[in-house]
Image (cartoon, rainbow, N blue to C red):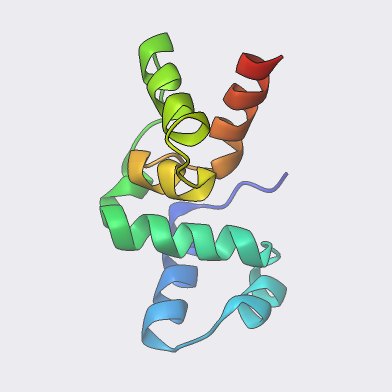
Length: 102
């Protein structure tokens, strides 16, 4: 999996917002999937550019359980909960749900 620098993430975001470039174009240009680009843009729009400066987080069991409850019991969309919580990727919450269910 490719790691993208903050500068590349910001370039993607600014091309989306300022130049009205969209998923297919940006996906080809930067080699990131369209879903990843849409998630990145949503994350920055919700939390601001400073979200990219946040170091990798270690989440408590209570935090994970609360997020899982929002999805499994509350019926919220996985992507929306991930965005609300400022997770770098939706897959992190998905993995926690799989671990919880199994």
